[in-house]
Amino acid sequence: MRAATPVGNVIPVRWPAAAAMALVGVIGAMAFLWPFFASAEFVKGHGNDTPWLFAGILALLTLVCLAEVTSGRLDAKTIAVLGVTAAAGGAMRVLSAGTAGLEPMFFVLLVAGRVLGPGVGFVAGALALLTGALLTGGVGPWLPFQMICAGAIGLGAGLLPGRAGARSERWILAAYALVTGLAFGLFMNLWFWPFLGANAPSGMGFVPGGSLTENLGRYGLFYLATSLGWDLPRGILNAVLVTVAGPALLRVFRRAARRAAFGAPVGFQLASSGEHPGSRPRPPGEPPAEDHDTRARHAVGDPVPRPRGRVAAP
Image (cartoon, rainbow, N blue to C red; front, side, top):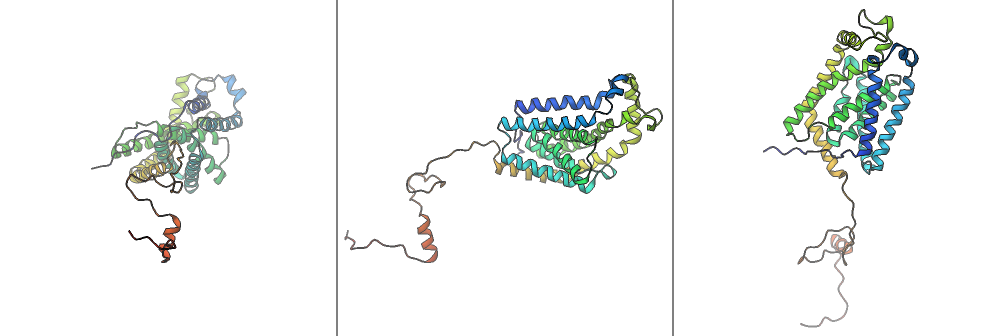
């Protein structure tokens, strides 16, 4: 019989963190989709505002962390898990660095978001991209967009349907890995596509002030011609990793989460007389356990001292 898969997130999202992530999502959507709705005047006046976006995204990520702290969900154990996940994702990005579109770091983010919840998945994804950028020297105007995309991938993994068996969960995560591998490149191209100008292929460049359908059609052709060949290997690789190694990594994360006992209330109980603090309660009828000194004397062969004097006959 197959063991039941745990359902639900280990660390659910409280409303302060949800509000902060919603704010990040709104600003992120504006940062990605503005070419399809902006006028030509706006493009000329605000085309170089990416450094402000980078500072704003870092401030909003700090706001998400503060929201988690104030809601009591981000304790020392959660911070440790976040650090390990971000370090693992950053290290895997160093190994691949996006070569031929292959970026296995998203595999770790998918599993972390699935087990630990959407809030932790979002913060872990953003921090993993930041860590990888600092290690590889990939800090630039593209970084805030990468942080938003990676955070959204971890967030979505935590929002996947919770009630699923082990086999169903594997295939759901694999399908999600394939889709997000393609979506990452689909959105990431938008950070530079409006600024290609004459360097864009013919009929695929951004038209400032153009209609929504015109720019969507041009960008669709640009994505198919320049990016799909990179994004498809990324999605396939992550789907294969989830299928092959996903169940084992899910068990590791869930075992660590159970031992960490996220969200479990901490209580203290006074020990009864004759027992050391922290010892288990003695059931009725069970003789008292030997104390530490008595056990030590038995271990070295030292007899237990007897009371002096004559013992009265029964």
